[in-house]
Length: 203
Ligand code: GRF
Image (tube, rainbow, N blue to C red; front, side, top):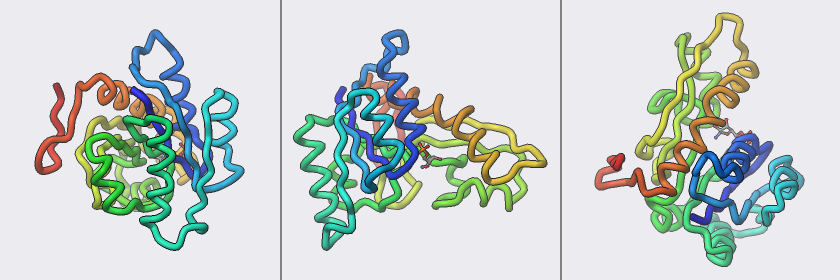
């Protein structure tokens, strides 16, 4: 399956997806054919370039509306023949048209065990709540933020001396970078799909 990855920043999850898809022993059944960033000069773009993956910078500020920005991205995804979209640290909210077009074919990764701690600072929220376990969630993207059907979750412990930085790092290296390729493998091989009422069906 041809995959397009949308990023806004460092792209460590993009790197995990690149490494997994390029490793034939992992049988991900997917190839990243395009990386789109809404920010120029981010490390994620350099990661794609190093892996010889085509990149596009589409700056949201250059488009008068969210819909037009999304249409510009969609045109590039279509041109590249993309069949699955992975959001990997992509910091823009997507229009309902884009979300419904990619329904069941678009994944996101979030740094908490959803439905706890939605939004931009899931790690900080977990520390403030005093929970002893957090982790990551890979889910289908639906219109409501961080509310789509859950495919994979992976937990990590929270240590008493954790800061947002140390927890963020542990969630990425021990959870996200393993869970995201695994979720992509399930979707690319038709082993999971999004059914009615946001229900996830594992086949
Ligand atoms: C990750 O923590 C992910 O869960 C969140 O954004 C961050 C992206 O990090 N959605 P990176 O750019 O993949 O390093």
